[in-house]
Length: 148
Picture 1 (cartoon, rainbow, N blue to C red):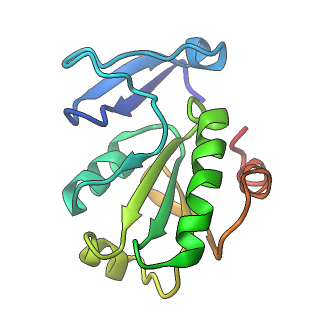
Picture 2: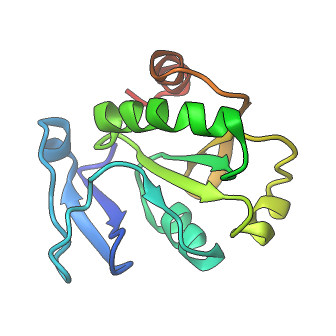
C-alpha cells in the first residue's frame, strides 16, 4: 500500500484520502464531505455507475460479491461475506452487486453463476471465484492474492 489511499464514500460517492498507516492501525475515517463512515460493512452498489466509481477510484483492493435475491447459496454466503468484511475492510473495499439491478455490469464481467466473487486491484480483475464460501475460506482466498 502507498502512504495514502483513496476511498469512495458509500453514501455520497465522494473520493476521500486517508493515511494507509492509520488504516493498518485500525483507524476508521469518515467522509470529509458528508461525514458518513467510510467503513461500515459491505456496500450495496446502487447502479452500474456506482460500481464503476468504487472499482476505478478506490486504491484499496476491491472484493465484489455478485449475487441475486432469489439465490439460496447467495443468501447463505451473505453473513459470511459480512464477517470477512468486518475483519478486512480497512485492507480491502467490500461490495455487493445485485446481478438483477446491475445487468450491464454482470454481462460485462460475464457472470454465469452466482455467487461469484471478483477481486479487483487498480480497476482490473485479478482473481475470480464462483460458489459460496465461509468467511475463513474467503479470507484465505484473499490472503492468497495479497489482501491481508
